[in-house]
Image 1: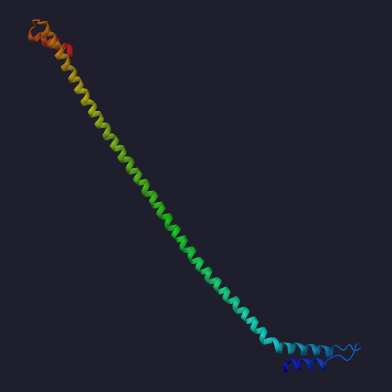
Image 2 (image 1 turned 30 degrees about the horizontal axis):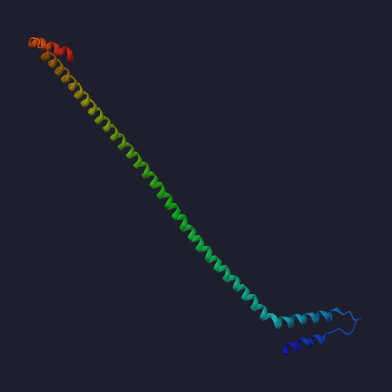
Length: 166
């Protein structure tokens, strides 16, 4: 209340006397006193508002900085994990290539073994069929000779069989 009374008194003290008086000095002094009283009355409130606003901005800036640091740390961790995953993927690809090469070589080796086995079986089968054919021809000749009852010497029979088989 006192402050309001003080402001009112200062206004009355330096108020102008009429419309014809254009004295600037009393008006300037009146303005300076008004500013001083306004400062006296509102300075603490304005300082408090200003300082609270500064502290709020500071707190918000610190929280943003903390979030930025956390985000940066997470980003770095994710980048590290990506690099590790990339290295592991390259290692897996290299291992897969090596395994494919080993399997390829094994398949080729097994195929060559199978081919050799098939060749051996073919040769054995061929020899068996040739032997069977010879036996069949000999049996036919012997049956023919026995059925006809021809008197041939043993050397002649052997010559006939040799010619037929050969």
